[in-house]
Amino acid sequence: MERNDIYILNPHYHLRNDTRRIVMFSKNRTDANSSSNWYSFIHPLQALMLSFFTFERSLEENIKLLNNYFHCQHNEMEHYIMPFIENKELLSTRWRGQEIVFPRNVLIRASKESIYLNLQPEDLVCDNLDLSERRLYEAPLSITLMLTNRCVTDCCYCYADRKSRSGAQLSTKRICELIEEAGKLKMKCVNMIGGEVFLHPDWAQILKKTIDCHVEAEYVSTKMPLTKDIIGTLQQIGYKGIIQISLDTLDTKVIESTLKVSYEYLEAVKRGLILLDESGLKYQIATVLTTYNANIDILMELYNFLTGLKNIVTWSIVPVHDSLYPKVENFQSLKPDSEILRTLSEYFDEISKQSDFNIIYDKKVVYKKYYLEKGGAKNFKGNKCPALNTNLFILPDGKVTICEQLYWHPFFIIGDVSRDKISSVWKSERATYLAKNIWNDIRPVSTCSRCELRKECFESNNRCWSDILKAYGIENYDFPDPRCEYADEMKNYIENTTFLRELSTNNIVDINTGASYSNAQDNPYQSISKIFNFSNNLQTL
Image (cartoon, rainbow, N blue to C red; front, side, top):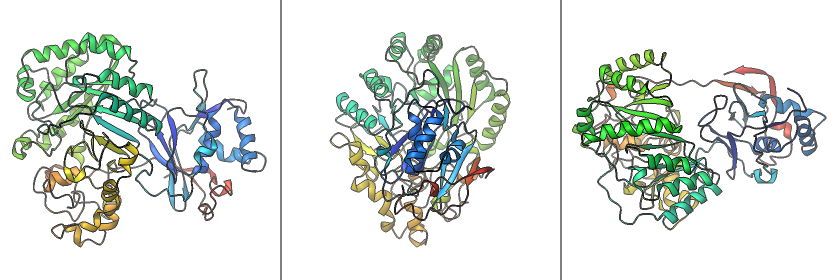
């Protein structure tokens, strides 16, 4: 590392002012040296420091400018900056008891192709700092647009609400306006799903708009047999994401039985897949495991076919998920036995060692445990629920719900973007009620009504609404999350006997020295040393 070298904020990471803190997040398609699917809250002073590295300036120049800006001693800022330069591990510090975590490779050496974001310090000013609130203040980090719920198949395992048919559809003009708003709000991405995305007459125009507004989704999923026209259009509009092709088996009878399609469908999918492979576009295969195809011979036939393709990125295998909408008895009959799933897990672990493409087997159905997490929702293991925190789901008619599995359930409709802005819906009375105040209205029939942790638990916004409805019925939104140790015995969809405990660990390097930052909230820009008091002795937590 030379002080005359140019170091910049990793272009995979972005900063967004969220009123009371700065959101640091990764865009889609990060490289191997960057942290994928990242978002965290950082102190505005830390963001301000990083903003100096969004211009074409040497490390030496930035250190001098920062010393002057913060009235630091000669080279004092160097001490604060160095941990961020090409850091190979996650970094953390603390402010007022709140942990602040940074991704890998925050500052990297600039290249000839580097884009300089030119962030201005005044855009990163916040008052009344709050790093503890999970829910974003200004707007979601992403939105999901359900363009249509029409499909080319009738999958027996589909979790979607396919019976509801909305009346008026969002116009393409209005959809593009929403995408423009998402871009202005500096969202991470706008996801597009169906139904079948390619059945929307203006899918290309809409997808191109996400590209132009820099909110392109990581992938587009389809079950439609691809044609030269579709592939050519994807190339023409400059789509750089992944095309996800759903393919469960090469057994024609199984395809016909599970997808309710004709004999010609499978051959059309295979022809389209070969065309896609030859196009140079990135793609992955998604396979849903049911009692129809949870068989090593059937899956080996599919694997052998995939090995003949040149440009496949990933093969993703997901056991069938629980759903709110199919009949319980019909859906349960599709779920493979837990022992079969474990056997397949071991099988995929072995073949992945010799495969030329990634094989991802979703083990959550096998290794997920309910009834064991103490202390309420904030202590539940696994991924944090994005509903009401970072994501909104927009239905084809413009109605906005909090989760893609809840669809038109009236209790969870929080707005309508056919007439309102995304930011307005995010801050709507209904959204605020569900995020902050619903704990006041828990019915006596719910176990939660008698729990002393109910306020803290509900306000943590980490209860999975869809799992609750699956377990206890579509009207029992105020029942415990099945992960809670005090949860009632499940009545419907989720079979708790098949789940094992899933433990998660974090690999975080602590660079905190114990500074109190007691004056930061009164005047957060008073002293840089109160925030950037990093230690040179890195320690893995």
